[in-house]
Image (cartoon, rainbow, N blue to C red; front, side, top):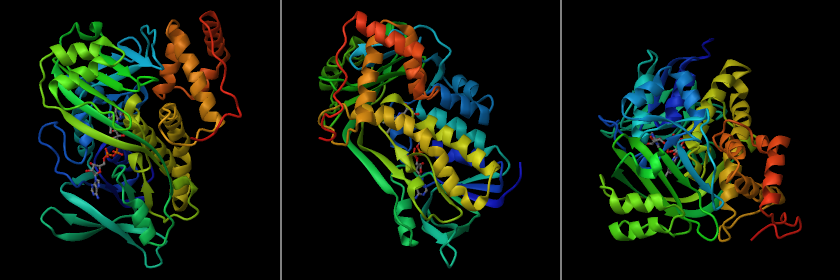
Length: 455
Ligand SMILES: Cc1cc2nc3c(=O)[nH]c(=O)nc-3n(C[C@H](O)[C@H](O)[C@H](O)COP(=O)(O)OP(=O)(O)OC[C@H]3O[C@@H](n4cnc5c(N)ncnc54)[C@H](O)[C@@H]3O)c2cc1C
C-alpha cells in the first residue's frame, strides 16, 4: 500500500476507533489512538463504553470483516469463553409478534461479552508496529490551518491535567454519539451537519445470570423486538459457558425496574417464557445495571457543502440507532472496510466527501430496519413517509410468513445481519413465498397511500 501521510490520530478507542485505526495503519507511518479512559487490565466494562455492561452480539458480516483485519481473532475470543453461533439455527427470533421458524444456516455470529470482544481487537491492533494508544487523554478541540481549510491535529488534556497539541495529517473522530464534531466544526466556521433524531426513550436493564445448558431450550440466544400491543424488547445472549447476559426494556419510559421481583415480573410480560424462567430461577451473578437510550440519532455529514481536509467522522459519531438488532459494531466494521477502500483510491483532498458518500448506503440499511421498526410504535413521533409505511407493512408480512417458512426467515435474517441487501426480501422467490403464505393464512390490506404521513 502507498503511504499517504506520516501520522493519523483517532479520537476514541472503542470498536469504531480500533477498526478505523486498523484501516489507517496501512496508509500512515504512525497511527495514534487517543482515549479518555484508561484501558481495563482485565476485559471488564469501562466508563467510556457504558453499553458494554449490556447485551452485545456480533453479527455475521461484522465478524467476517474483523476476522479479515485480524486473522485468528474469532478463535481468540472463543478461547476466552465466547462462542460461535448459528444466527438462525441457534437463536430464537421474535418480532412483529411471531417467532421465526429457523433452521440451521451458514450465518455465523459471535457471542461473548462486549469487553472481551473489544479487548481482543485492541490487543491485536496494538501489536501492529506503527499503532500506539494514549490512555487517559481527552481530546478538547481541533487544531486547524490559519485559513481553516484543513485540520492539522487535536488539543488534548492528559489525566495529570497537562494540555498538549498533537499534530497529524488526518484526524478521525470515533468518539461515539456524544461526539463534539458538530461544535468543533462550527467553531472553525463550518456548518453543523443536519441531525435526524427519532425519540424513543428506550431503557435497558441488564443482569448476568448463571447459565444452565438447558435454558432457552438449548439455544444460545433469544432476541425479542417489541410489537403492538406489547412493545417490550429483550435479549438473552450467551456470554460464557456459565453465564447469560439478560437485557430487557421498553420504549418511552416503560423500563424494567432494578428490583428482583419487579424485574422478574417485567420479564414475565415478554412474549417468551424463557426470559422469566432465567430471571426468576437462575442464580444472578451481577447486580442490575441500566442504560438509557433517548433517541436514534443520525448526522448527515454527506450533505455538507464544505468540510475541512484532514478530518473524518466515523461510527456512532455519525449514526447511532436502537441496538435491538445488534448492528452497531458491524456498521463500524463495514465503515472501516470502506475507509480502507477510500484511502486506497482517489484524491486525498476529497477524502471526507468520498468517505461520507460511501458510508451513507451502509448506514441507510440498519437505519431503515431499526428506525422503521421504532416508527411502528404509535407514540414514537416522526415522519412516516409512504416508503416507511410500505416497508413496515411488508416486513410484517415477511414475519408472518417466516413463522412457518424457514426460507423466508433466513432471507430476513440475512438482511438484518447486513449480509444481504434489503432487495433480497423483494426477490421474486421470496415475494412468492410471502404472498402464498399470507394468502394461505389470511392477509390484511396494504396501508393506503393517502394515509397521514405524520403523527
Ligand atoms: C445498550 C446497547 C446495546 C448494544 N448492543 C449491540 C450489539 O449487540 N451488537 C452491536 O454490534 N452493537 C451493539 N451496540 C452498539 C455498539 O455498542 C456501538 O455501535 C459500537 O460500540 C461502536 O460505537 P463507537 O465506537 O462509534 O462509539 P462508542 O462505543 O461510544 O465509543 C466512543 C469512545 O470514544 C471515547 N471518547 C469519547 N470522547 C472522547 C474524547 N473527547 N477524547 C478521547 N476519547 C473520547 C470513549 O471513552 C469511548 O471509548 C449496542 C449499543 C447499546 C447502547
